[in-house]
Figure 1 (cartoon, rainbow, N blue to C red):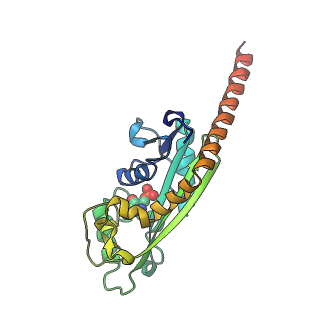
Figure 2: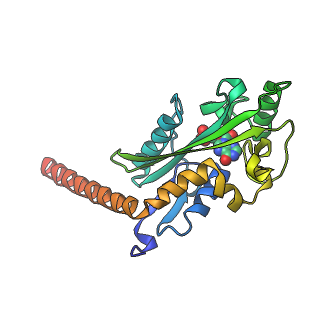
Figure 3: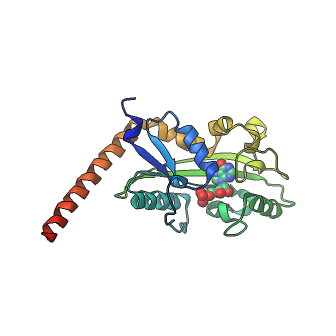
Length: 227
Ligand code: IMP
């Protein structure tokens, strides 16, 4: 790759260490320096009030890019269960309440599905890659599975112990990170992004140059006003 890692910083717009670890793993051979919000001090967070994963992903990416002045990649993802009319969906992180733990969310899911025969569910991931001026690229992927009656496995995060991926006969929490990323919603969306790697980097560089020009022009204007 012709790009020096120090040339390009990409901020993952999350404090969720599970998500961040998976994205960093997938982008490890990406010629950029990948950070997440834990690398920065306390910064404001946008309200995730979108009705779709795409709206929320764009909101998080655009907001973070603007606040930090750096390109940002946001993942909005969640679990949609057929028998629950798509719930918890965009509310997956706070299914059992605003500060709910993964354990509480999993317990609530098991209660909601108690006695239910239809256990079909899918994970969805929308990635939004935004620059400070606003425009964004979007990638989306799904993974189909079934919800078990009780948790299995200790890896991963969120609903991983309850989500069985039938082709492998394992829950996501029974897979290594590498195995999970080879089939998961997030892994597949990141694969799409990576397949456009060269174009994405060109786009980021082009947008960064525009941004620098715009800032330069603003500085000149401000200088004129003040003098
Ligand atoms: P977000 O930060 O609003 O995108 O929250 C996504 C939530 O969906 C997470 O907190 C998890 O509860 C759930 N989720 C998303 N992706 C996964 C995954 O790969 N495994 C398990 N749970 C996930």
